[in-house]
Length: 198
Image 1: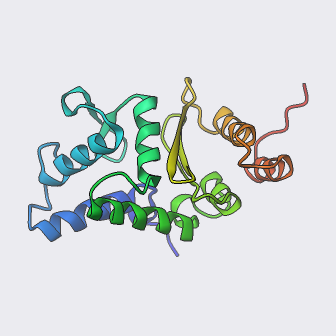
Image 2 (image 1 turned 90 degrees about the vertical axis):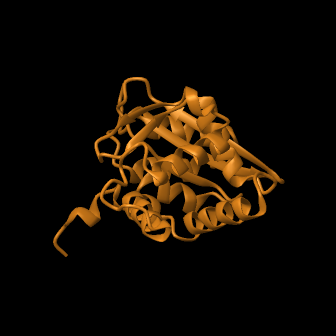
């Protein structure tokens, strides 16, 4: 298969936005504008899950041309926790969140790709664990502890996601008792990180 724009790691997000715009019968051409109904709905949902006040969220544009929202790590972790919390939101919101979680858990390779950290972690950890890599050293995760969702947001300050983020994520999951040392070592080796000898 020859790579196309559909192979871009953001293509799913754009497909979802366009599908919603088509479903709502609103303009497709301007779906990336921050005042478009789809983008307003994205921001509204983000605020509902993270607890961020709509007026406090800074909006920029990332490399895939979609509006990108700046929130705190605490808010991001809260959003991940609420995604797994079966008590959060209205009935339809809970049903939608459950579909997202079951889709991620059932098809982790569609989240991260073959042998990627997201995929390996979701394949290795139970407890409804989900994970999603982000840009510039961000990593978001959540798991269920009884009926409570526990969210984790991690950001490597220098933005280098291929070095410290993987090691920090795996170490944190070991510390929380979600990964054993042997599995953690196997996952770290599978990520192609260089061996540190000093």
